Every structure is written in structure tokens, then in C-alpha cells.
Image: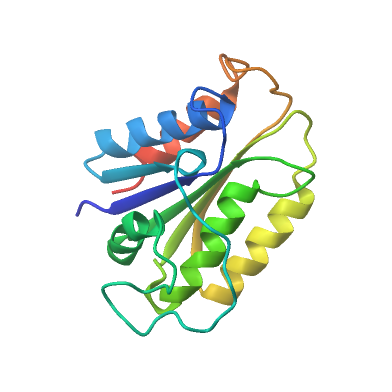
Length: 176
């Protein structure tokens, strides 16, 4: 049965290493018959959460703020799997992804059941991000399908020839 997958790509580089990994994942997932929608968050207008507790009351507009989250909410509701993709910024996910994820609180009751973490980094210090992801997953009740953590990639194209690129493709392709 085909799955609905959304990729929340928090990289500011449309042709960077995180995007290369998500492209490989997406290609594999689509070849396996899944529907995949990728959001390039740096190209979208997404404000930070205001902590107003006003969200979740209107199904058509779950957040009190009206911005590009309106594009994400409907597909997130239908998603079976959410992919959190980000470059590693100071041992954590990018601000683009953090803002977006915070805003999903307005429809928290609609969380998908499965998740994937995809990250690229100049070094290999993923420990803090993995800790956050593992605790998030436990708290929300997600089941992780896998993590693709690609270190020692700085410039666009540095993922070429790296095993993580093939692993991203295979992880996407394994989803049926």
C-alpha cells in the first residue's frame, strides 16, 4: 500500500548536501510506489510559534498565524511518514526546521506514525541531534524508520560517492 511521505527540508541550500540526501531518499520512495512531497522550508514564509495556545481550534486554519504553514498542515495531516531533514547547525537542526516543527503543535493530534531523520554536517557531531530526535520520537509516539547521518560534507556535491547517499535511496525504497 503506497504511503504518503512528507519531507521537511530545513536546509537553506537547494542544491546542498542535505538536499542531495533527500533527493536520493525521495527517488527510492517514489520508485517503491509512495507519494512524496518535499517542502524546502528556507524558501517559505514560516513564522516562529507565538505560544498563544490559540491553535488547533479551526480545522481549516489550525494556527492563528496565516503564513506558508497553510501549505504544510493538510499534507502533514495525511502523512504516514515525516522526514526531518537538516544540516547540522551548532549540534542541532536548522532554525528553518525548528520553526516549522514548533508550528506543527497546532495539529499535534495528527502526528504521523513513522519518521526518518536525515542530516548532513561539516563534522560528525550528531550526538545532540540524535538525543533530541530519540526523545521527540518517544514523546510523540513515532517509530523511526531510520537515520541517515552524513558527516564530513561541507560544499555542495560532497555527498557524491558517500555511502550515506545510497543508504538514503535504499531507506526510501524500503518503504512499502
